[in-house]
Image (cartoon, rainbow, N blue to C red; front, side):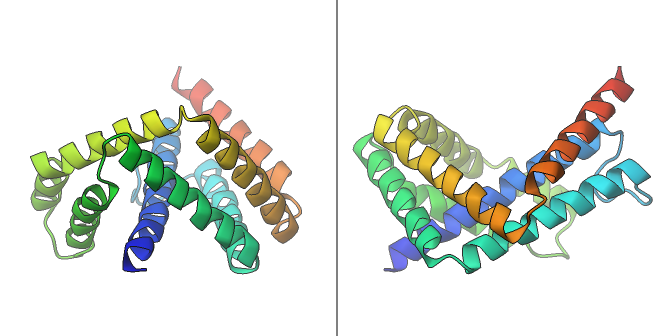
Length: 183
């Protein structure tokens, strides 16, 4: 059971890291860096829309026990396939979660943050995770389960936030506008 919680935390961590990376990339495309003093109107709209989707996703997960079970089953399948491919997802996650715990210290200087992120141990864990995910995502059983989960998740998000499709379209428009502004 503790191992299952570790993998659940991994899914949340992976999702959060992906969201941070995407929002950071989108903001960078807009000429803004995360944490900049005064975001422009476009950046503010982007962040507000992104937050609406995040709230809807949280609501979808909280209000749908079947969706949570589906996510856990997908995690278990991915973990099993990683092991079958020769990877140790538990060890990988322990390394990444330990690094995450250290990075949450608000008093940690930027130099030490970089040192943690660039450490051989963290880089190796990230590389192993990436390789394992690439291998696993080639498995037809995982692909089918992932597709079904994504469809069910989007349906649940749409029930929470009826304007989901419009919000996604607007986020994409903002990213295109920002991309054109950089050229």
